[in-house]
Image (tube, rainbow, N blue to C red; front, side, top):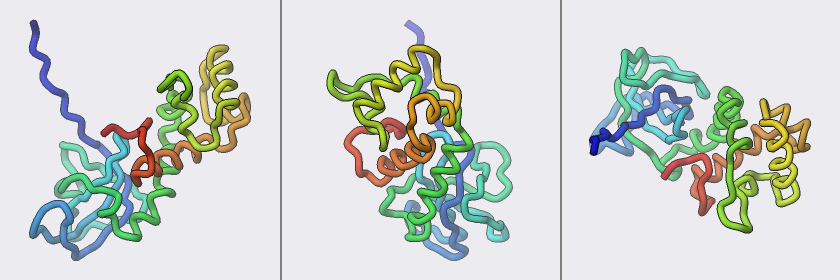
Length: 187
């Protein structure tokens, strides 16, 4: 019997949702400073970051937060819930999700190629906005012929309008707690 160490999963990059030069942390008690609220790129985690005082940020900017040498971020303070976000961050979230999904298109196209049924009556594809039973059958037939290669390929072959935006909507619903089942977020 071999021992397998538990793999820690950390975000390497995140997208800036909001930044506040003088603010109190919602995660770390009595911590003040240049606080950044961000969305992790890989695991779609809402994060609170502590930045260097002289750092400059733009909303929707992609910043490095990994373990190596960071140029703008001092530390990752912790995870946030959707309700902990500022109103500005909540407003930015849908736009940032669309950018994130578009920039990582192959990852999200693979969901169309690999999602499976949840129950005998419900397929995971049906949880994506704009996809009902009829479109699910079309997607399953098309992916059996050959895997989808891009969002444009999905749109052309099955007629789903803007698949990237539909995925971004679903991720938003999962982040805000509007869903019972998650496809894209891990609990």
